[in-house]
View 1 (cartoon, helix red, strand yellow):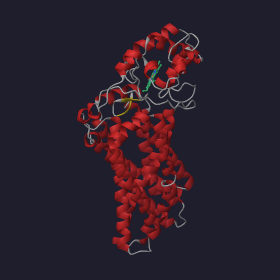
View 2 (cartoon, helix red, strand yellow; view 1 turned 135 degrees about the vertical axis):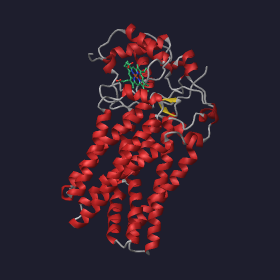
View 3 (cartoon, protein in one colour; view 1 turned 45 degrees about the vertical axis):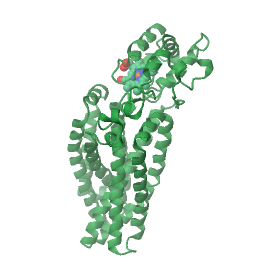
View 4 (cartoon, protein in one colour; view 1 turned 180 degrees about the vertical axis):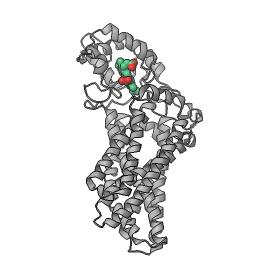
Length: 447
Ligand code: HEC
């Protein structure tokens, strides 16, 4: 019998495995964008400080750097491995797809990351202790190494959505996967927004300055960066949208809630107002206000952005060939990979998934509901929470429905044929569909 090497499913009943990854990633984006943005900012400030003899700018670099050591390099370094751990169990084959294509890219990123971590310590602790030229050089190395980590990760993130060039599917090759229509649009847009995030987080640092004149001066620097970031970033966002494939636009039109676009522009507008306040009334920007602004960016800026990115690559989790539920749905000759759908269509998931307990491989009247629950965990739970809370709870669609025939009809119709825009094709054998339907009727609730 042919068996598919699927991994056991990580079933997270509270919010769903997808959200665990999502929440962690969103927080991580805040830390990582701040660290890259601040490193670039330090590079610019240190250059001006040494050229024009403005030691107060170095004082600021030191203070912000010290803050970053905790904010980005401790919290960021916790959430970074957190993403690795959570994605590895939530989406082992998605991660595998990325590693098989980009293993050396990732190794390179690690080298730059190491330089970045050592660099930020060096910049903070050596200011005033070594000669100016050497310190400036270290600051420039920090800025460039930091930006390099972003460049590399970005190519990998773009690949998660769409492999750079269509030839990647047939020929493989990491450059084909890495550079695509959207790589540079995304890079430049993120660079700009990164400056804005750095400015908002920086206002937490300046809020702690007792010297008002110093605070005003540094807020002016930060706010200028922030405003440029929002305006140029907003324009580049249009470019980015234009590089997305039609399919993504279709999904965005159909799947993103109506409030999405207005709230996005409201967030950008809110940031502009905040930066203007930083320019005009620096006294207003206290530690509390700055912290609230930072958390707002997390909730109103980064979270929707991550959710949108997640939505528009549906039903795939990586490279347009690994479904969110881990099944490989497309031949990728470049990697010697074959679609698993034909085998599942032919034999059913119960007979082909390696981790199905033996007593559930064959459906009986006694184990039917249990088999159905197992199928729901494997095939649906990555996108639909099986409890009442979390990501798109299943109970919202089937709650209160006790008609097995009707549900089975839906499963064999829309899902088995892959006839929805955003869901994977999930070929179910007749008895599997019946078992899943039987389980779905037990979800309770009313609808
Ligand atoms: C790749 C992620 C993904 C997987 C896996 C998935 N779904 Fe969905 N499903 C979605 C999305 C996205 C929607 C649209 C949600 C909305 O509009 O509220 C959806 C909607 C639905 C709906 C509402 C009707 C419809 O067609 O829009 C039903 C019913 C449903 N899913 C059942 C299932 C079942 C049963 C499974 C497992 C056999 C499953 N889904 C697996 C993503 C997924």
